[in-house]
Length: 195
Image (cartoon, rainbow, N blue to C red; front, top):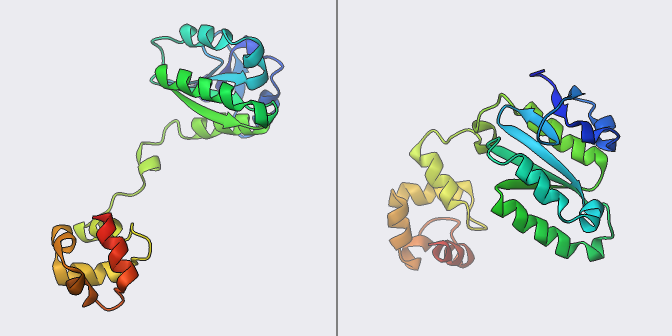
């Protein structure tokens, strides 16, 4: 059903299913481990299982080849952390090459939360991630200027009032910048380094 997360029959007994408390789910004959939305699916992999059966993930990726524009690999980290780095590095490369988003979970509950979060975003647009667009050029300029550590909104407003544009600010001398109240040596240095 469109409102449920669909789980592949192989996922029967996966502890994460018991942790799906905010979204309905049901078993279905599907290619991925989890069908979240029309364009989103997830494969689930425990790191311990991957170390015993490294070929498994390649078979699962092949099963969803050409399907879904957004494909997740939920990796449950269930082994000693000190020995897991090479396997995680390998799975990161596999994810990049196969256009998968790698999501790390430490527990079945965290793995379930990833599924639920993606399901909740099913009908939300990209603005959920991007945030509200800045309305004015002044707001956008202020955001650019406050990126260097120590330059605050008041400084940004004063800089824009005096110089009028990012280009003029970037070309201003240290002496010109020091005329702005609140712009000391450290802020000027950081601002100039940013440009």
